[in-house]
Length: 115
Image (tube, rainbow, N blue to C red):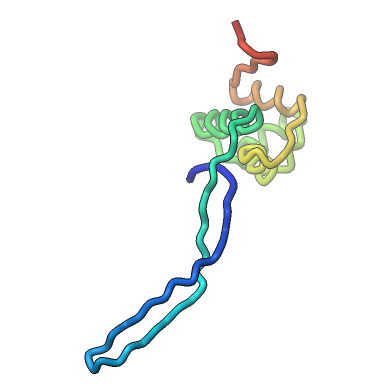
């Protein structure tokens, strides 16, 4: 699924059925419509995508990553905390960023161009 902000609204389509006897039945209802509007690329969204990608490449579940965090002495709030990090919904402390990088083998560059 594309990432971004979800905009929900309702539309009221009308369906008219013409029967063999010439009568008509009309039906209308508000149908929910969801539209995904892309989010701007931020350092947080790039980090979230890198965490998700590195975890899946390793074949780890979110629960496994949460367990590995706990073993490293970092409490991210279990599987739901990992999910929130991966969606960019949870602020990530520097010690958590360092633990994620160590556990998943993510190379971090701070301050712009790594060269």
